[in-house]
Image: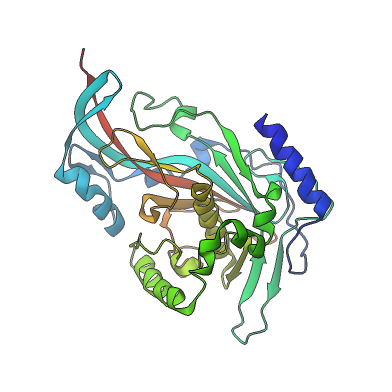
Length: 337
């Protein structure tokens, strides 16, 4: 039923001919050799550090140290779910649970290596210069959000309560969302965007950008994405100076949008359950680029492209794919009779 609704919405969007306001550019070819392989595409060092009962394993940075502080200070835990009760130790790590495509070719499902939605040129990505004397540019691209619980796909650690075991699925294709094609339409269903479009809110993002460069994330500034731009408007247009940074910005914005749609969760601080994220906690996520070039490390939301994007844009390839790592906190133990 959900897939039928998606494709009906897609047909409606195509019939309306909704697209980017910028002049369309030639879309990058949707390649067939990009089928997702978790063994080779995922940067497995990104799962570290792992904290078990307050003991940290693996390298860590400032962001990891802050997130692991609670697990280290409260290593023991106890949980109850219905009639089931269990106690144990807290375990925390970065879990690869979601994938995100940012594509100039509508319907190009990078994880599947196929173009599932030929649009005849409509909804196509674009790039254009902005005549404001800053030499900046504007990009428009579509976003695909996949449920991809890699641990479950590999049948590993499935006994941990915080490892999601949902099946692989396509949770969102922005081609079916008129609001992604136009920031004006997006403001209708997300009117709070008007509050964060003023100069004062923009100045606050300077602090977020500085923090991201230092490897930190300011969660209260949820309308900022560090050096990647602003979270609002929640649409496919983004200003950029570095195209790889712009891809990451649209991937992060898509993650925020899933929260606004009620489809984003994180593990609770006590490690016992998952809680909804209508407003994201940025520090609980980091991204690894997988296409067109596999990244050597994961980056926190908003990290300046100058520190990580070099050599990640292969010539003639303007479709990108990211793995989204979520900070998982588990209460791993044994159930009582």
